[in-house]
Amino acid sequence: MKFHHIGIFVKNLANGKKELSKIVRIKKKSKIYIDRKLNVKVQFYYDYCQLCYELIAPYGKQNPVSAIINSKKNILNHLAFKTKNFDKKIIELRKLGYAPLQAAKEAVAFNNKRVIFFLNNLNFIIELIED
Image (cartoon, rainbow, N blue to C red; front, side, top):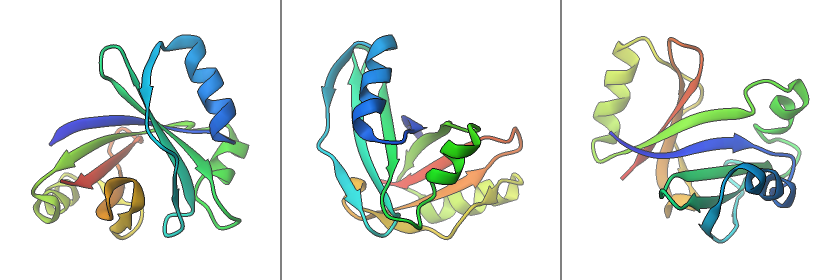
């Protein structure tokens, strides 16, 4: 697996960028992706070290973001990794005791490649992205 990004839940992308900019010197950003399948809006920001931050905002009423933001827990939500062996890696993570949080779904921000989220044994979330 290859590290891809740190995922951060935000109420809206503009305020998220404003807050991220207070601690990170942003070098470039992506376009805004609206993902109706995952019910989120996302935008990627890159710092001068090429570290990638994904800001994830709610889109629609049935989204995975709002409840977490309201709980004020797990806002720094996940670490994401890309893999060419997506299905094999899912099996490996399950064998390690990682619990899938949902079935794999296509993600607009990754050209409709599949993503899946796992809760790991340290109680934080790992996102696996099909490469």
